[in-house]
Length: 510
Ligand code: NDP
Image 1: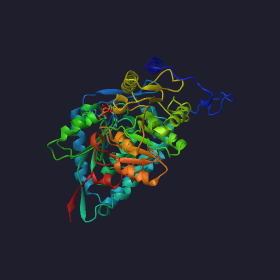
Image 2: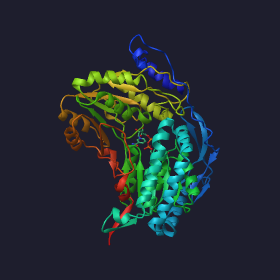
Image 3: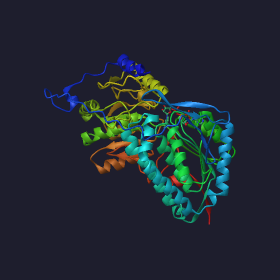
Image 4: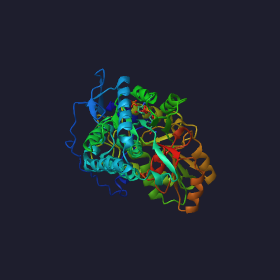
């Protein structure tokens, strides 16, 4: 499959030549130096051959003994075999969650629930290196991102919501906040531990219990989290982890014992889930896809903007729902900006996710690599101009070169569809009105970025963006105190901040 990554780029367009400027030096001064390998040790992680489901505080096999393999996308090697849940297991997990909610967790005072959440946060921090390495092995993301972003932010969400557990009365003044009951939570593979924490921390703080289904390609950090729950002495059944295929997600969504469904993933599955809960009184939040515009005005600090654009689309291989996948550059600076971007792309390091120098790791799965490859080919076929920097890709694994398209029309698939890969489409605009039109010309509405020197322009543009999150002179910044969520086909409901608590409570009059 490694050949796929290599073949892809060679069949579409040959990678650009290495130029002296790609070393950050002027012509004639090129010194061919390389980074020394800086691999993070894998031995902090103890992989088991087999993992069970986590139900009622115990690891158990699937009811029919089924398992599936989880693979390291950087090496294509099997990391472990994981239990493949059946509908009977889903039923068992929901019952365990219900028992825990009615008998122990739901009845605990908030300050007692908080103690468990603080404990979990602390253990996540203590075991952060182990989590970071495991996450990079299972998902393909670079270690510097799992180490510096995913794991610290996951712990921060537990710290943050632990603080709210005994203050729900202040979060919702004049109302009484009651837990909804049992939450079914389905998460994707791009930020496995972080999405788990976005969902589990507020649910538990508000007195709910949960059954969480991780994505099939990235189950391991959720199973390590199950160990953390045991270490924290969390009462049995408060957190249940079901590994298995999409149908198990649907078995949870339609289970009559579930009170709340929270989903992050593709718009297509989000639609099916909405149909699955229609006609019931289950609460639902959906966090779906995106096609964010990153808008650069001619007065923006261009070098800073280049870093923001790179972070916006190449962070986590572009497998980010809020990725800045459409660059809108004001016409007068477009050429300069694109030149600077190409120069910067030449310094991006693609390769072993466990190497601390790696900027872009492995694509999460073969299927995702195929999807990116197909969409990039469509961009070429529809007439956009492709640029890929010269970089050697590892011989094995699912890798894709950072890619930039110019001459992109709004009608191109690469400008309309969520690629979920390291692929940037550049469009141009002349006036702020045109930028607004183009930015909002998408079925999605998750995020946007604005780069300009003028504060008043930031405020005006932010007001006109039909997007849940708008970053100004930065991109892809997250904080547990800040709500996150979308409009239109990007879903509804908010996660993070007090808004994130609201999604897990029923408010009653005093
Ligand atoms: P999915 O939406 O299929 O997967 C997200 C989660 O939903 C996974 O846990 C998955 O399980 C589960 N799931 C799959 N089918 C069902 C179902 N019928 N009922 C309930 N749960 C289900 O995303 P993919 O992994 O297939 O990725 C496809 C595309 O979606 C990507 O190319 C990307 O464009 C987009 N995507 C967007 C994300 C976002 O955050 N906006 C996140 C992930 C993907 P399983 O893994 O077992 O299939």
